[in-house]
Length: 119
Image (cartoon, rainbow, N blue to C red; front, side, top):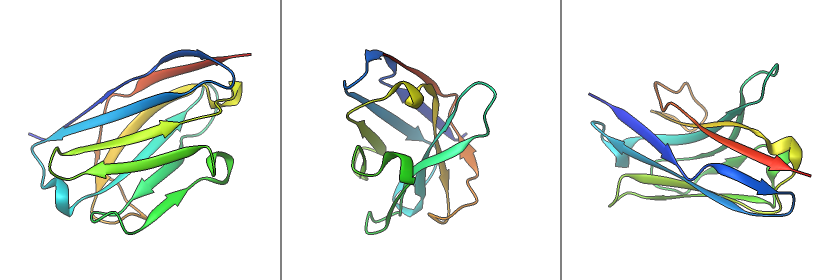
């Protein structure tokens, strides 16, 4: 059974930082591309960042470039999202996902973790 579990969400003031982690089990992590997505109330889900299985290809949404950094540790079956200079518009439920290709589609999803940024 494939499981993806996010952690590290919370509340922070604008300009602050958070680090999200996604720990996986039940899949061949080193063969999987990983993505971070977010969805705010009333908005469509947005891909925030993605990283290829070996980490050589990294993609970011324009809205987070220069502020967010995605990384992975294949030995620990974990992918992280470092979020700096957070803005109120970053408030959303953040989820990690796994799939065969960095561009998608993503096959397995975590439950998500809430990130709230106050002004």
